[in-house]
Image (tube, rainbow, N blue to C red; front, top):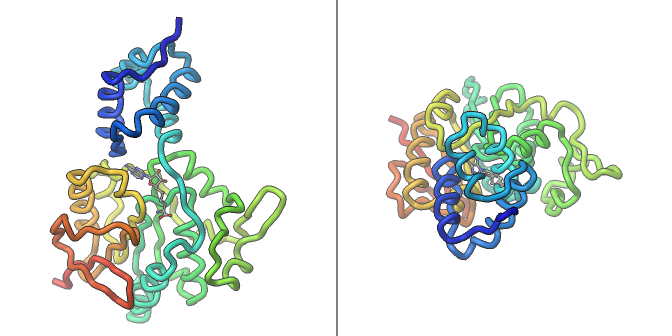
Length: 274
Ligand SMILES: C[S@@+](CC[C@H](N)C(=O)[O-])C[C@H]1O[C@@H](n2cnc3c(N)ncnc32)[C@H](O)[C@@H]1O
């Protein structure tokens, strides 16, 4: 007999496991949503109870690919081209362009890039300013399914719901029967990688960056974890570099060592030049 019911005890241990591994935090009000995702994955993987599924994920050395499939099912991949566009423009015109003009090769990191619309929008702006080949753009995510779609350059029509720069959309994004196709070599200018933001060793291995975008992901983490992740991001910033979070996110209450700056309505967190 199968029993894929998520009891309060199972909710407690499974949500703790997920949070420990990828940071996603579930309140008790999210129990029904988590229950349906877990039951779907557990049944697809052939488990008859969520307790067995939990033991497998927690203790079985061969559970890695199932955990990956679960993460793919759990993460919220919501994103779209030119989302929160002013900060992207500001990152290019006020940080990357001046660095290129001064003879540097700046590095940018999109730290939770989902299906790629954010780094692709940035890549279009870099091309527009003629500095694509002078900027290194790294895009990472914890969802292998999202990264696969990003690499393939295929996107749903809803990814183009906001078009502040029609000329860039017309140049790079073509509509066909299957949705949106990224044309040319735009996607190949991006170094797509799997990185879990909780894995400080993997984060450190990425090296230093002049601009980090970590937008619309910290909202899924508890405050204590946000502080920990921000500390890691801060260490990755080069002197004078800037961290951008989502417009509805703020790091003010974490007392980060970065300085919050407002430029024309855009908030960013700056590392000192020293
Ligand atoms: C809502 S999307 C945000 C995408 C994009 N940054 C934007 O603002 O449009 C959140 C992304 O965070 C990723 N994510 C969640 N937990 C993560 C973790 N621990 N490490 C890396 N990425 C994570 C999810 O896979 C998802 O693709």
